[in-house]
Length: 378
Image 1 (tube, rainbow, N blue to C red):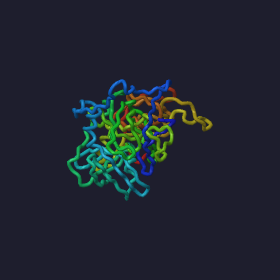
Image 2 (cartoon, one colour):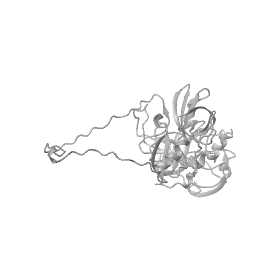
Image 3 (cartoon, helix red, strand yellow):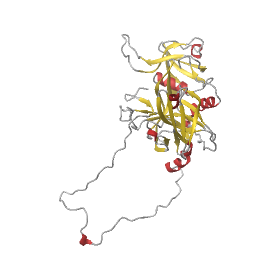
């Protein structure tokens, strides 16, 4: 997915100059120069009343009720390492301190860095990394010597609908326990937040939301109005560099990783296993990405095959270099990122129907997705 403004991971690096603006002044005036108050001869002046504001229970399904339920399950994570320091957010998975977050939040710690978790009640704990998965930008950490925590309730991102209300909770700019609300703006939005080496990119079929997400929200919870986690806040679109360490703040376009897609990977990390991902065994590019003279070619929908791995499921299905994949099951493929994000939403061993164009002829192939290895393609 190409944004003219760019997409960046929503992590906060320490050293950014976050400022707070002053109060706005208001001046009332009238064209005739008369005062905007009654003269003293009109009667005795009145003053503001002081009234009671009863502490009534929050209505079910309100942002207030969601916040009360979810805040105890979201933490702030402070990270330090040889390359610097930063902070992000995390979601409590177990009462003994397993916490889900983004890989880009904890990777700064490296091999010799440190992690410090701040809970909603203000207490702190050191933490260690249980597992990381750069391809889905997820990680699981373990808070040390804790018990009795409030695990988040996990919902289903597959049940979301565009326009549905959601709430984002995290620690933007280091401000822990911050709550914002909005709607689901789009679903299955292919988001590429950068390369992770060996030719791989972090691309996922994101939930787009206008709930305010800012640097530091990464790893925090995106929840529905029942307080169930449906996504992991991970990235924001930017309109240019801002005043916060060069990072722009919220412009109403934020992205969360769908929880359905990563739960199997989270389970693998918790067990100490290396995360696995589905793949076709091909490398792809946008259709017409390069013209005959090396100039940009025409823009067309689909992902064009650049290479097919020997022995892969794609080769077995007869898919060849130069073919253009246009659909996987019912998912339309618009470009290379779209194909990568769609395949990432499946698991190794899943059966899919791939629609592709070969020498101008539309074909379909039913195949079983491979499991990834060190190979660098989708």
